[in-house]
Length: 258
Image (cartoon, rainbow, N blue to C red; front, side, top):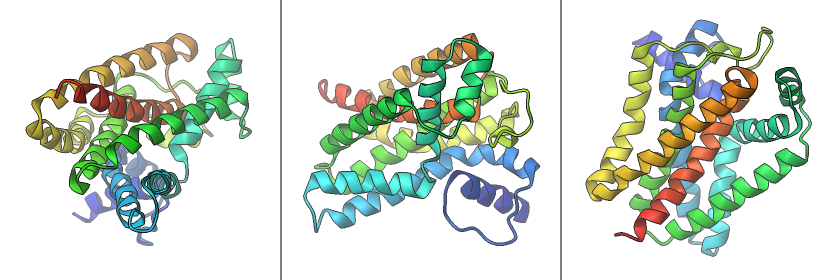
C-alpha cells in the first residue's frame, strides 16, 4: 500500500506543483510507474479549477471567473503541458529535420509559433468553458474532470503505442517516456473512463466525444512519428492540451443534437 501511495504521490509531484510528503522521492522506477495515475491527476487539476470558478463567480462576472479557473489550472501544473504545446509549435513550425525539431523544442525560449499556439489554445478554452459556465455546478465539474482525464489518457496512449524520440539521456521527460506495461495502461484508462461513463449515463450522446479524441490522437502519433520517429515529453503535453480543447468543442457540438 505504501508503495502504491508513493507511486501516486510521485505522479502528483511530477505533474503538478502540489506539495507531497517528504518520503516521496524522484525514483525513476516510480516515475515511470506513476504514468498510471496521469488521468487521475487530471481529476485533481479539474477539481481545483472548478473550485476556483465556483468561488470566484460569487464575486466576479462569469467571464472573469472562467479566466481565473484557467489560470488556476495552469498554476497547479506549473504550465507543464502548455510549455509542451509551445515547444511543439516552435519545433515543428521552425524545424525541417528531426535533429532541428528536437533542438528547437529543447530551447527554453518561446518563439512566434509557440506564442501563437498558446494564444489560440487559451482562446478556445476560454470561449468553450464560457458556454459551460451557466450549467449546474456539478455538471460543469464533470465536464472538466472528463476533459482533463481523457486528454491525459490520450497522452498515455501515445507512450504505449510509440517510442521515445530522443537518444540523449538528459531530457526532463525521459523517466516517464518509456514503453508502458499493459497493466499501467488499463489503470490509467480506468481513471478516464469513470467520469466519461457518468457523463454518458446522463446523456448517451456524449459517448461520441471519444471519436474525435481517438482520431486526433492517431493523427498526432502519426505526425510525431513522421517527423521525429516517435515522441518527446513536449509532444505528450501538446497532445493533452489539444485533446482537452477537442473534448470541449465536441461536447458543444453534440449539444446541438440534444
